[in-house]
Length: 473
Image (cartoon, rainbow, N blue to C red; front, top):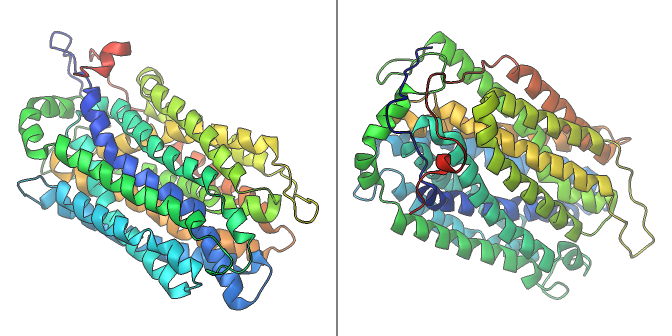
């Protein structure tokens, strides 16, 4: 790879304040997803059990998986479309902002009606509203995430991605706190989910909080990030970043990817599919796993989420510096391996058997699983997205962002169906198949990712320590 010695020129520095403001986009995304993943699979489980007249939750998990997959299938198709559309859009407020504002508005309006439909046992309403939310969040997601690489030089994107992920996890923390205050298992314990027996605010409040905070985060983004102005001001830094890109071959505007860069892109995306299949399987079904297999209170899942969030924030904070030392590939391999260890440990969880009317004790090692998962996947998420958009020219950032999220959503389309079918078709193992599945998928991901080339820039004077964080004024 061609390298340029720029030791005599001013060092590239990350503008932390601006990056944190961009992170409000990710704040809204993770806030909504945390509520969605924590509550919607259980809503579907309960409503399908009511509709089919069965008392066995394992018999309906394949239906839960199909619904979750259908929503994600639409997202799989639309993510690259919206990414490419935003690349080509020109408006007075920028190319990303129109998609962000419209996606936020519709999602925020529709989201609180999901628990209302569940409360009144409206299967069609729950499924339709979930589909609407997913579709418009995809309109929001690719353009929102593309904002960071739009105005961040390529060598600084791992550090910037760590910061916006921290902002995202702050959003997830709000959702987690709501899950501790409003306990789903207490609501379900009131009997059949109708107005007469259940307190609707126990399930409605987290969705309302998520919608309000999501709108607030989008407004902060709109009033503080002026896309067109920043694009003009940062053009020299962005051009320098192109010269220092961590790709096998130089990426040039108007030219196709070289064979080596194309191979690198395909390997990253293939590995990404499998690590998201592992991670999303546990993320989607963990609430049901705790309630129906461990037989513990749903509050314990919120505690694991808090621990995972703390571990993730630590991971996001150190990942960029670690990537500078050993390269993004090896940083990600450490993260994937830690997650693999966590999923493997989860395989040894015994089924809970509490006395009637009580909750079982939550297995302590599941806390460790979520700490390893949180820290490990934060290393992966910090470095993987910059590796993909590193291969894009400035005019194709949204398109490559769409590729990245299409791979993740493709995994999330397949995983709910596969896990639900596995649990249904292997009744002797049932819920024990969840961690086994995650362990296998993560092992495949690591095997693929080993073939990705580790590219590091040499002869480039990169700022270190606090200096790398740049100007926060």
